[in-house]
Length: 120
Image (cartoon, rainbow, N blue to C red; front, side, top):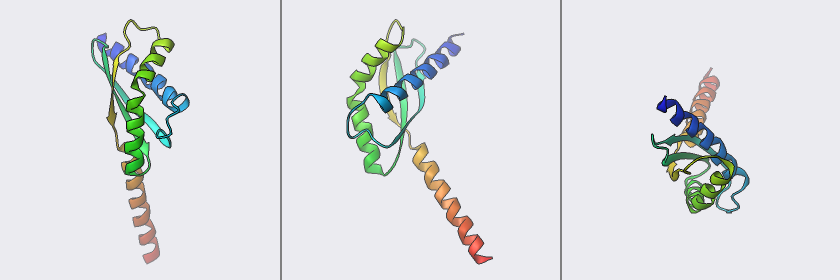
């Protein structure tokens, strides 16, 4: 039963954190297509690893992650206001390169398809 609670809490936190990042953080470094890809909460619900992916170049990615890390206190406060939880978990931001890797793979496959069509 505890496993279900962890997953449900992670899902709720993922939605809330995504909304806060997209709509409430005013840091100019936090721009572009930002996605909260996963939130993994510990069994005691005291800490959460938040995986964030940003579409763009590497420098924009790093700047966005720095901006979000600087806003962790704001994010925790907003979570405390929006959710009814005994404890708001400590948030640890983790980089996730899945969107940029997927975009790169798509471009490679598209180029391969175009080159094979040009040969025929």
